[in-house]
Amino acid sequence: IECLDVNDFSAVDVLAEKYAGQSIDVLLNNAGIIGPIPIAENIERQHFGSMEYEVWADVLRTNTFAPVKMAEAFLEHVAASKQKKIVTISSTVGSMSEMTIPALAYASSKSALNRVMTIIASQLKERGVIVAMFCPGYVKTRMDTFGYATVEIPESIALLRPMIADLTIEKTGSFTGHDGRTIGW
Image (cartoon, rainbow, N blue to C red; front, side, top):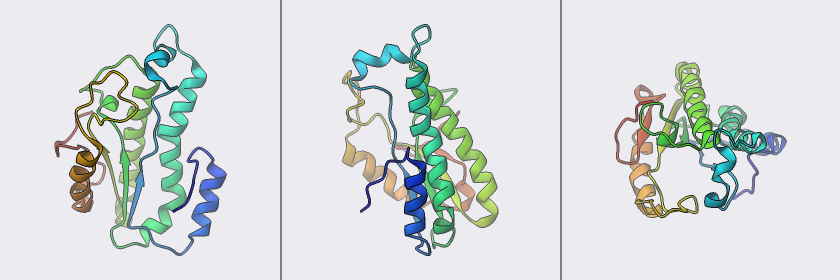
């Protein structure tokens, strides 16, 4: 177990170097933020007309830049493994066709994340590295300040684990919900 701030790109590089030569079957990018907490009191800080651009920058750095940095830093570890999977937890909020919320920072960070991961998937396919995005569902975490979440944490994990295990190179670049459906975006 290692402690890592994924926004500290130097620390990401140091950790990757520490484990040089060690293969990683599944690199799971799970770190993410919605913005300042408590959400209910701060959501206006990422709405059109009241946007705080430092908030947007922080959300983009964590939700979009950090997973790309992790993929870059640990690519050789993943490529040397048996499973060769880079999996990133995203959200249907990043879908262009499925969900609209006024949280510009969060929504755009997840849309950007999905786009860059599909580009990376096409670039790494020749190496046999599988890149996929998953939405865990509306999970009951601290992001659910309004009480709308319907999925318990253990349920989401139980649903995602077999889908991640069953990933093949034919599914590289895919965006899948916790319910197994392909998410359009």
